[in-house]
Image 1 (cartoon, helix red, strand yellow):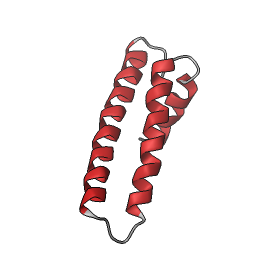
Image 2 (cartoon, one colour; image 1 turned 90 degrees about the vertical axis):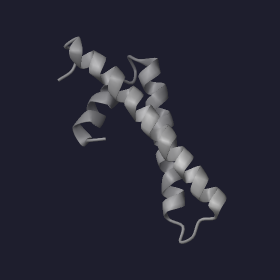
Image 3 (cartoon, rainbow, N blue to C red; image 1 turned 90 degrees about the horizontal axis):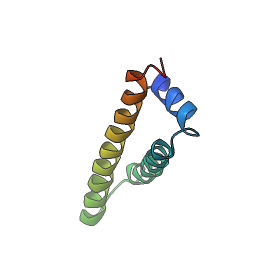
Length: 78
């Protein structure tokens, strides 16, 4: 996510529980991916898990952007 988008999202977290859920999940998945990416070698199972996490992260980001888009459409953000 871009820094500006993330600032807007963070400003809306207290107002939107659904957005907060997806954002926190996105952050957790980001941490898990970072753990995999710091390893020199991954087993086949770890590779599959990393790909699964990447897909979940993308789905979550799409949801976050969809919610953010609704706020922008309503004129509640810049």
